[in-house]
Image (cartoon, rainbow, N blue to C red; front, top):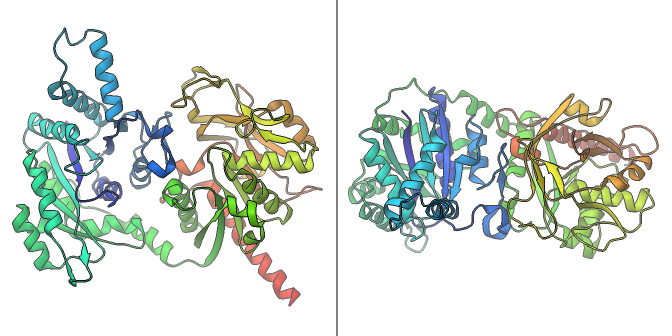
Length: 554
């Protein structure tokens, strides 16, 4: 039977609950346990797909096409289990499910209430996501004391009671702030947070105390006394320069032992050698490159979380330090491309809406003309296509219907029919709901031999999608005739998946690639990702060649 570890947060949000939970999961997995993770989000939205990046940060996409919380990206980076739709659910989904049941008469005319109907539904969802695993870590979003997360906490309490002794453990993450004016760490917020938790019937088995420095033993003893938690279970979690150091930090303080003891299990000792290797590679690079990421959410780096991590993973696997500098595409529109001169490679990520698009088009042109390695992801591929159509294929009015519905030359347009990851045909139009109407999830397609994409992926590619607009096949042949290479298409609809510039001939470029999907969702620190590894190698080669040219010039 599956054991459960519930991870809650207190005092303030954004303390790193997801990373702490994922790190604990990684340690338990290294001890030979089959581990999965769930994220329960207390907001009413059915999923984060329609939320602004400023509200939610990145939307992570699973293999089976769910738009989920960004923490699921952390889960996949830290443990081997692949996340699915069942691994993330919101209050909105729970209420939607309960109301559907009530409308069908499944409650036999009873008054439908938060307890037991909502809390039972939450427990059903938890069991569904945890099925088939030894241990399921369940991260409860929000902070203890919020009215929104109360049903989730109540459901966790009920589940631990019903499942019986040694079936569940509770880990609480809290903030221990340092007050510079007093010159000391303050434990009172933690005390209050635990008190709130105990008021609803949950006593934490371990406390993870976030601070900007290690917490001294006397402060840990004080927290233990006032929170009714064993002193050795008051774990200090200080700021680290990389998230991949957290598993070792937690293991050194015995968190996994505390949890295993509470769950009544005795798995083999932890083996964190892999994480040691990763950290060594991160801290001992042989090369250094700087990549300019041209986007419009540059003040909110959370919206590019998987992407920045994928580039770091590529650095690990190429023995290089990959620095990322964010460039506001609206600034390029205003001031031109001079800011791009210093980069060893240019990356244009995905995004929605018209704002800043012309700046991204200028960035794609700059990378093409100056032979700088270029990677366009989703919208980044579409702007590269628009740029090439305008400047090389004689389609001067080329645009996307996303930015101009009346454009004369819609080289990128809304597709109204496509095959989903599970083989079902989806249909939509301009009036369709925004939520859940994109091409989502994994899709496999063949890669043309003799292309850069084939060198990276081999004969086929399977990647995850999240987009509404596609390269318009009506114009694509004309752009191909002008020198652009379409190196992969979807098997059913023949939609463009990968485009590139050739490496020989009149339009040669050393490394210029656009992909319609989001490869960052499949990158892990253990394995990296072939596309980002190839991109990092291209940046290293460009830098080395550029330096040689500068030396010759001087």
